[in-house]
Length: 173
Image 1 (cartoon, rainbow, N blue to C red):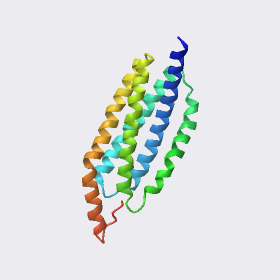
Image 2: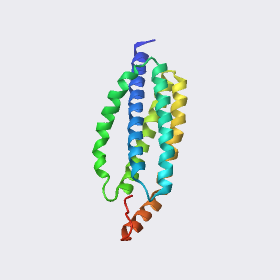
Image 3: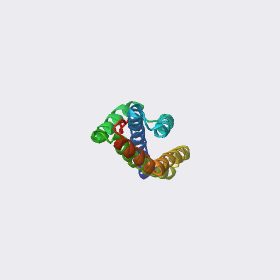
Image 4: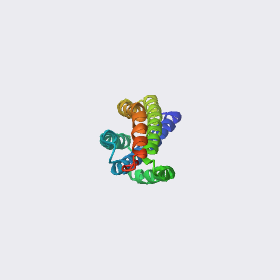
C-alpha cells in the first residue's frame, strides 16, 4: 500500500468514527424528542422508526470500523465530542420545541446525508466496497427521513399553531 493510500485509509477510519459518534448523538436526540411528544402521533411514530434505523446504522458503522481493524474504544470519546457540539441546540426546545426540533432534525438529517455521501466516496476510493455499500444503504434511510420531515413540516407547523391557539391544549407536546 502506498503512503497516499494509507493516508486515505486513515481519513476513512477517522470519518467512520465520526459517523458512529454522529449516529450515537442522533439516537440520543431522537429518543429525547420522542419522549416529549404526545400530541403528534405521526411524528412520534416516524421518530421511533428512525431510532431503530439509527441503532442499526451504529451497528453497521461499528462493523466497518472493526473490519478495518479500528479501535472501537475511541468511539466513546468521539460520541462525547459530538454530544458537546450539539448540546448548544438543546436550548431550542422551548414552548415551540416540536417545531424547532423538527427543523433541527431536518438539518441534522441533511448533515448525515452529506457525511454518508462523502464516506461512500472515500470507501470506494480506498477499495473498501463493503463499507461503500453500507454507506449507500444508510444514505437511503437518511434521505427517506429528511424527505419525510420536509413533506410533513407544513402540517406539523399548522397542527402546532392550531394547538397554540387552543387555550385547552399544550402546543409543544
